[in-house]
Length: 134
Image (tube, rainbow, N blue to C red; front, side, top):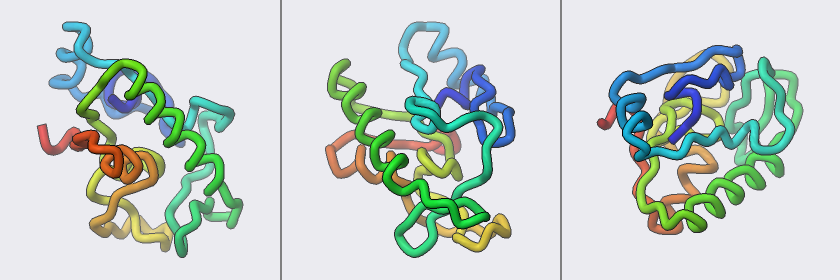
């Protein structure tokens, strides 16, 4: 489960998106919290990122594509290590976005698409849903 849906202030803006229904699952020891963007070195707070022409860029055009790919693979490794078959990932997140993302204009417009981690998990037969689909 995306850490920001539980208690961690790991979003780019140093906040979280606590979801009570998901928090109850965590309290029953049914979830492992993970933030792909913090598995390696990306700090909080940080510049927002969006998918631009198959690259993950900040508004200042810094390229984080390789890092996001590496983080997605790390999440997949964790999932395989624990034999997990389903994931709840944060809608709109640049690393986790499930089903909907921002449209690469940095204007908060939305499109239907999967971000890097969600895409990799689905390619490996992991069921991914967003908090909105619970």
